[in-house]
Length: 163
Figure (cartoon, rainbow, N blue to C red):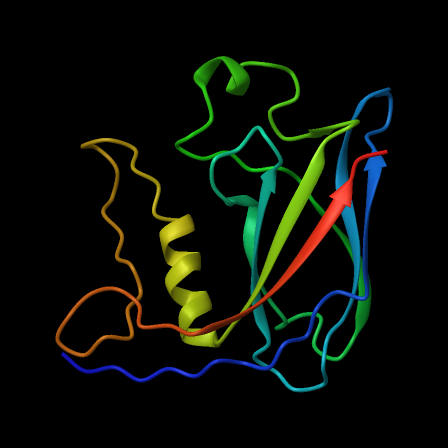
């Protein structure tokens, strides 16, 4: 097996903040302002963890992002909470499954990844298992003679208090 990867330069968001969802008094999401470098191929992956609630960092809703359309631009975007294996089923059935709550301490892990790493995670994200009747799809790999990812990532960590 052989593979090659790079660890990209960090390019964290300019700012992150909590904002309430429209028509909600205690549920919201995170917004961020990001300035993309003028070189194509800047990709990132976003995970979050709520203090004393989540056991691990969990990919947010739509965690894998690239700069094909926004290359060299500055823009504002949002982060909705994702869900993972360690979230109880009861919480998934609540009305706030994609939101953070007022009072939450939210840790954001912003991972800078190269394009091959992005393509791997993007293919995993879009490889839904619809059971035996779904058309099979493949996962992108950068490992010659194998399957998976040999990837490097640079990480930035942020703490946001939902207030």
